[in-house]
Length: 262
Image (cartoon, rainbow, N blue to C red):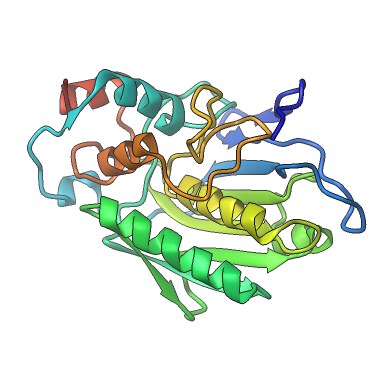
């Protein structure tokens, strides 16, 4: 596919106590043809109430993992804080051993298969936290499959003109406490939707930023690339974030001290 000349348009919001990260580009009306690759957006805010989630101290300490310099550099781009906001660059992630994921709306059989593959792929890479599909109303992550016209009613923080969107809350200690994901069902192909499922669900685990230097990565920020599998680099980031060596609130310095660079 040919890359457009204009990169993703990003919007920013910030306040004294919130870190908000928004990323977006023009989304077509449901009745019109979509762009080659639809937009995605992320928004994160601190949790409004104290979290009872286990702290980083509750996790067993692990030996320093080995990671190559290129992967660590990419980790810093993707995993440290929000894209915009208060300019705080720290690790944000789940601390629960099992994070439940509930499907809502009208996903196709292909959508469900794709979601199942993403959950399986993610769990194969993690040592501290697994995703688990559930039908419980109290699921930690909710994945809504719906037309764009319904997005605002499903997520009050939804930013218009986005085909994929996620919102996460975190505690004062940067522990993610819940997430809400929106996936567009009309006007796009099942392949594009599968890309959105993988990107949004993975970003809701704490890898929330985009970058423009690895087209095969699910975090690639340009229009034309829409991978439906994790790249080798993506797998290294997930392994590091959920390998037990780094904790919510870790800075670049703390992460560097927690690993062995090869």
